[in-house]
Length: 199
Ligand code: 5GP
Image (cartoon, rainbow, N blue to C red; front, side, top):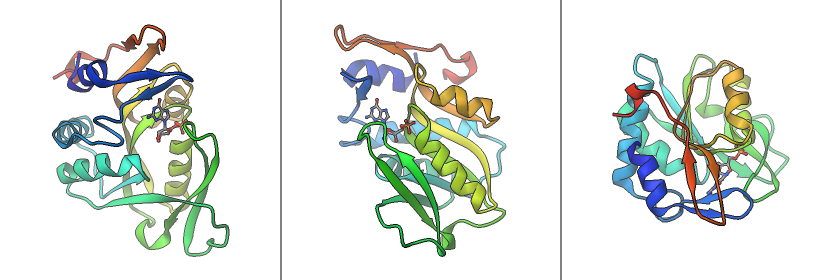
């Protein structure tokens, strides 16, 4: 079991509706030492990839992306959630349906900060149905940049996002993959990952 899986078992709470609450260390209060280990692990998993920018989405992806960026020594751009519709032109826009809030948001990135030729690592806290990632991928592609990899803290492997993104051919690295959880018992089951990744 890796450091993140151990922490999820210790402090994660299984809520109804297939929601894993990790707000004591990941997406409300943030354990920066843990984020450091995650950043280091992302760097190891994407070793050899030429990356010049990290792209994430507000709000929970930002902290993880910023700490990871220290290992890649690249800037972080975050997609902003916006209800405004009058922004096309200077902005890349994608529509994203929120799994946790059950609403649709437009996410926007200024054209100033993402350009043709950029080699992008996308980072986010959770992967569930993959809507957030699809939005970010479409923004990168619209910019004429390339997605060099996708790093996720927690993938919920029983939802469709992971399979869909891997089937599209992207290198998707999730530090913990939850294959099942039970709100009644609080149990959480992880997918086994390759030995080399368990350092
Ligand atoms: P997706 O777009 O892949 O369906 O969902 C990804 C987004 O939904 C993540 O950025 C995260 O903010 C949120 N999310 C999805 N599932 C969970 C969950 O079980 N727990 C928490 N805390 N956030 C989740």
